[in-house]
Length: 164
Image (cartoon, rainbow, N blue to C red; front, side, top):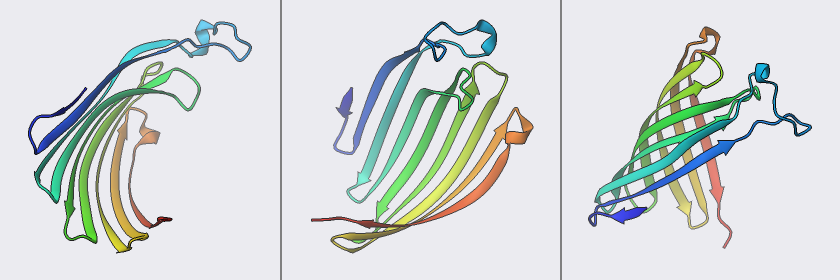
């Protein structure tokens, strides 16, 4: 579903369903003691953008998406919320600032992770075929498994080339 509520507000919502039947590598059903399980769950993605000015806007994204655990046992049920402000300072300089929070529930274990992050970035258009960018991200993760807690910062520098 997509909508244009006003000239300044747009959005979309996608609804779905994921189902997985866990099988052993040889195609038989899994041993119930293996920790691997079938899963069957609804999913959604939604995004709302409010753009009060032609060069500045806010986007709120909200999503629920299960993924397989890296251990091959069960799945991770993720709920993710992100608010982003994008602003074009000129035809060649733009910025973004965001805050994000997501929760990962490891369904076959007692593990649960809550992660909060903030970030900012600049993009500079050098000419019609080269963009330069710099992004900063700070992330803080708290887990019910103490050895999985962390916080850290990342700086990312990029160059994007376009071929005409």
